[in-house]
Length: 244
Image (cartoon, rainbow, N blue to C red; front, side):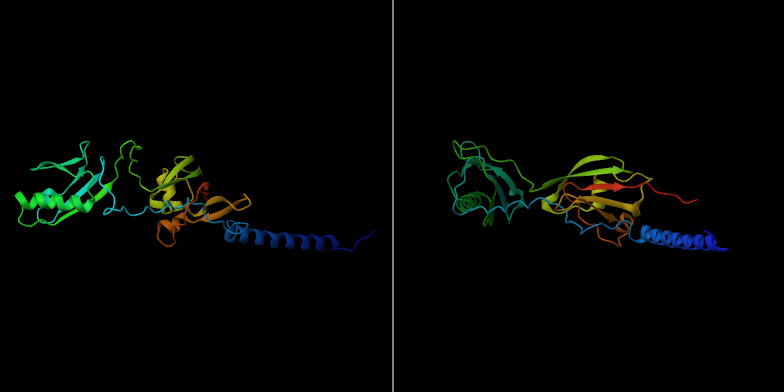
């Protein structure tokens, strides 16, 4: 079939125009929306906060062996100290020596220490006694070690970081840790890492990884808040691309 002169040139012109428009759209998308997640941003997975511990019933429960007592004497701070109830059920307080306290309430032990002080050392003694650790009832279990009420999460660092791999991060008292903070805790970024192109991969409710962009430079400069990292998050630090 015979085509008029200029037919193919006209067709190529249309094709080139469409291709150029598509390229512009692609470039704009790379600059403005390439790093946006494909779906709703899932919230970080964080451990449940530890259950609140009830306040010790210092007036109603008796002092037992192994209890740790904090002593404050307002008129003479040299008496301020932590005391442990020993196996005989007493505490040792200089210059008095042994003072039996086992079986007393904290308030009762407080009054007893006050009487010792006012008898030999001070005209007036304002005594404050607190139980700061629980001992072991006879035949019972050993006391628990001190707990910091902290929780732990597992995160992954990859690409341009100094220590790639999995890391366990402690959340002090259940408080969240930011993404940038987590990068620093686990060793920091490699000098070739691109601060502006960091992203995390986080599973949504369907276990599909969502890509969440993080501008670490803006966080470091204080112009953006550091979003919390969650359990199972994968932090990706791409390499910087230099233009020529």
